[in-house]
Length: 320
Image (tube, rainbow, N blue to C red; front, side):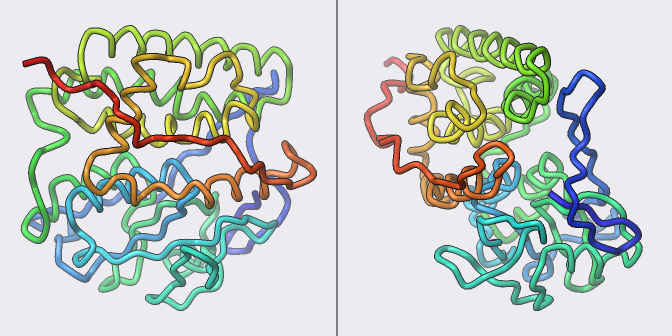
């Protein structure tokens, strides 16, 4: 995708790669926090904050999951970009399951970044948490937005359970680190690799980590014991896209998630949690990856399959 430089959009792809052809993800730029007590300068208030997301993007998907689980639909409004990304970047439309920008009236997501910082330089990515009152972007880092949604808005939503409880934070962080590096980002490092060596290194790390997660889930129901935590919701968006997109499109084809007994059942367990299935839009997911990433799929043809039955019994209930 393109990039903004000094507030000007440049259509040319500026994805970063190392000398060996391996993909390097750019860092996010807006890193302020919404807090319940307002000590950060951004106090939690109903109706003040707005999320810009894509149903296709796994990073944005984390935030829509937390918004749904916390029942914050009335407290934090949302816009959903069109799944097709052209050389103009993410854009808003009236397409199926899209929600135009009713806050700033923007045509392109880059307009939101420009409104927050007129000389902005960097990637234009989702999710974005926007503050209506200050007319600026608070944060565009998904891992931090989910933590705000987890606790800051409890006065207007459902604050239970805490998905990042203090006694488990160290273990959650320890699980998050390899999951991010080798799974969440690992599928991109595999799919975007520009050399055989870089591809194979990412591929091997991805499946070694999936094998470790499979063994872990053979010992316990969730990644951190017997309760769902942030670690599970950070893994879920990658797992739910894996068989439909990453196996074929990103050449992550050693095994499907359906081929892992524990991971496959675990995926269905999470999918069947109340409110979660409604956050999964497989049409947007496939249309974005296959229809927009033309360097990988030059024809832009979107596959009809696979058939995924995520409502089948998962057998992950705790024993009596």
